[in-house]
Length: 280
Length: 173
Image (cartoon, rainbow over all chains, first blue to last red):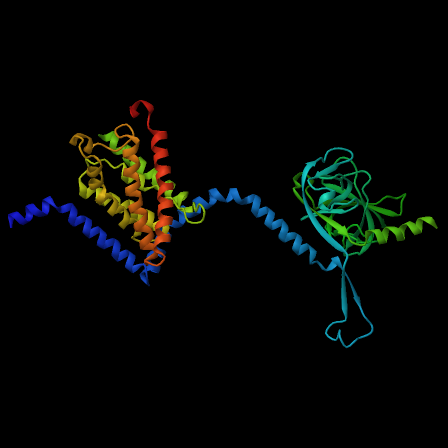
């Protein structure tokens, strides 16, 4: 008996090794079937907070790629908007088009760019974006951002383009105010980068604070129904028969980053029509 | 003595942290996944009772297991590494005096060749066991051996780099 105890004391570590290995084997064996789920749920209670902490730290490394993906997805969704198309209905119903006699023609296409330079406090404000003619940017393209209208492309170089911001004394955008559904023009006056003015609305039109102002789509630079801002204040002028309406712009121009550029696919056609007007 | 204990504990915690949060996500070329926590086991002082060494190895492996969701595999491999470690050391120190056997294997006390062979043998054993237990099959055995070898070389390289970077130069001798 004494010998046995001595033997065990001397070789206890071998015994422990074997016991621990058996425990391991039991674990491995069990992890092959049902108890695996039990163990892993118990494990997740412990490991969850650690993974959460790691994710909170590492998520910042992927923002660039994630942003890129989101922008590309946005472009895809923007292209699907109803106002990008002209829908024509054939009056003749042919046998082939029995299912649908609607024909959709794309008018607007979208590109994206990042703002690399931006001013808001000058009299005439410009933006510069990181894409130019080799990326397909052209003059007079409309510039939007997720919150609304930003401006119009002014000048294009090979890799960059400058944009006349809405905050520019020459900018003039055809707009519609809802629910009155009345056409007007947006201008900006030096001073406040958060507000602009809606002109050419007759006095008798009923406009309330909080009414939304959208693009009209008549200029064919901007697609229809893009938000510009909301009515903030209505000024009546006894000399003029038109209202001057102060508008709170929906875009925060100091925080512009990604912008979307709108390309009118029929621009040359429309331009030639307009030049005919001028000649007459 | 106290200092050595503290250093070992902090080394274990640091290596486990690196293993769990960084190395488990490293997949070089798709299959090289270094298990550098084994470095802490390699540096475990030989003066600790063997039973305690086994328990430490088991606990270390099991913590890695919990995070990798491979219950028991790392624990088992770590145990084997600790089990064969004294035999590897005695086999490598043939002809030298017994005194060197009881010290911790760091660059100051052993030359580079000794450390390289010591690390290679133990890391290979560890990686091989893990790969075999994970796959649980002898199919494509030589491919498994090949990837294990590459993984071993990478882990050994990392371990020796750490060892030589963080050992003070005056100790190297």
